Amino acid sequence: MQQFDDTSPDTSPDTSPDTPPTNSIVIKAVSLHGDFKVRDYTGNSVEIRIMNSNGHYYVILSETEEFWMEYSKYFQNNFDIFKTIVKQTLVEKSGDVSYSIIKEGMKEIVLKLEYHSLFSFTVSITLENEMNKIMELQNENKLLKEKIRELLTKEKLSNSKTQGWTRIRHADAWSGNNPQSVKDFDEAKKICIESNYGGFIDCSKYNWYGIRTQATESNGGPNYVLNNLCKRNQSITEKPWGCEKDGRKEWDADVIVSPGADFHLIKQKQDEGFQIVWDKKDYDKLEELGIIYMLSSPSE
Image (cartoon, rainbow, N blue to C red):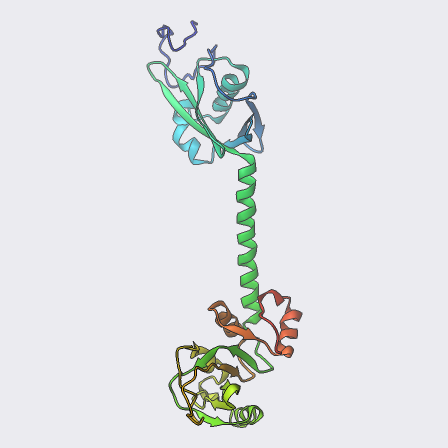
């Protein structure tokens, strides 16, 4: 059979699509620095490799992939015939199929197999840079681990409640509603415990503590406080209710959440940007559960 190239006319006899070409070939010039390596891989699959100055490139093709669904018609739907032609073309440099490199980049190399006859075909094969592929897999693995850790965290926190008082810095709850106020921190805690209130506002700068009597045991207590958190608006210039108004100064406050709050809800508020200061007992509990990474600092 006469060989063909880009300048001589094709004088080879017509070949039906049921009889793939397997004879001699004229290989087109390529810019790669190494030779192709083709080998059988696990199962009915084939691996193609090449190396250039940017690294190792490879692809693993099998008859279960979309690639084969698209091109199997050119090889009598027989993957073994395809593997034979690939080896002849790329390694043995024989047969009637030619190849060329249509793209050679850092991330990938695109290889084109061509057969010129009455029933011509073109097959494109993309080889990935092995190092880039490894980095992509590492990133995917990292994301997967983070997702698993997040799911495990939710599971561990789902039935856990705080034992101590949790401080939410620079926050308020039901901003603008007049609470029951006292002038002593411990007194505010005592009232919350005795009446099962969910927490209070700590504005120690003005010796003012506003108990959120809306957060009763019947509606969730401490969780009700957490669900109504808002970040302290630093533009407010009035002192809190119950303080002598001897001037207009900016003020800040913390929310103190009573014991019995859901851990996962506090974690949710932390993710929303609230600054959490955990009670030492709860900090130790989370450390025991192995999820210390999710914490802000423990109580001061």
